[in-house]
Length: 398
Image 1 (cartoon, rainbow, N blue to C red):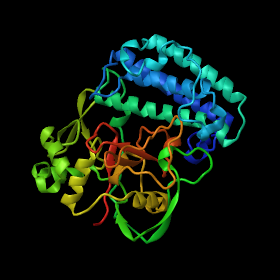
Image 2: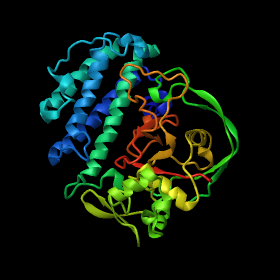
Image 3: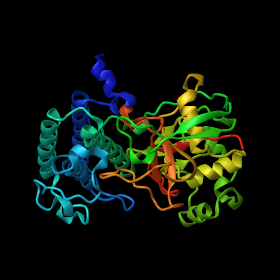
Image 4: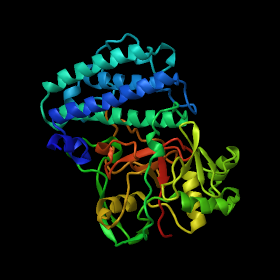
């Protein structure tokens, strides 16, 4: 394996990627977008799911973001110092800026392919003559993160729509390996630089590092698996109001929830809808497609709690060689989305800070996250009731 190939999968290298590595990564991400477009086109499944964006909307967004913040951006060379509301050039596709207000004007799949090809060609031409400073490469690196996230979102849509034809190989979310149980880890008190330092590409949600003390804590070595979660459900976890927050219980009652999303059976073995058919989930596979409400209820039932962001980040950074496994599923953590010290939104930001108290936080990454984006500092924001993400959780001692 070449050094370039290894760097393509390394999250630390990719945040400091030069023009050569960025070219490879951008093409890799675009190829995945095109493969997903072919899957949805073949299944005729461009419709919205759960009120979210359609597959075509997401694919169009991949090309539009890249064009808007690279080819059309008059302040591209200013990087994260670019003005939030600066004027930009016109798109090569008339009406592109209005595509996302209503989907009626979106091109068909063939038109989107042509748009994606043109925008990528322009991006690579501009990148080839770009200087190597962080500010010069900022929007290229942001476009890469954006398109990698689009790939994950398309995988979520495919899972929700149960896309699979007879004779197709199992979808990737059906083959997630299990992990043998391990004892929880005792983490000694430590100091942590929570968030990311200056240098390279730093997403808005990670700006900027602040030092804090983390008291001693005990944390699961791996996410909660189906065997452990099934015990909660069999013990009446979904019928016991005292285990849920007030908003969580209202959500569970309103949605008549008795198991995580797509789960048809928990007692006597977990059966999950995958690819349009019932499949048995391995007992040691991590729980997936759970809301934060469900994660919190399980923790109360088990006499545990969700880890805080500092606890999760410290363990991810320092305890991997002790068996702290992450990256199979995104993981809910305690608390609501909040900015780190010194945060200010940047042009083209992917993670605008939501209003206080409205969004939960996911850490880590999932099996559908490209390896280059599984960074221990990465954060995602999602509503506490959301269960479409490839998300699970782990617990801490109270």
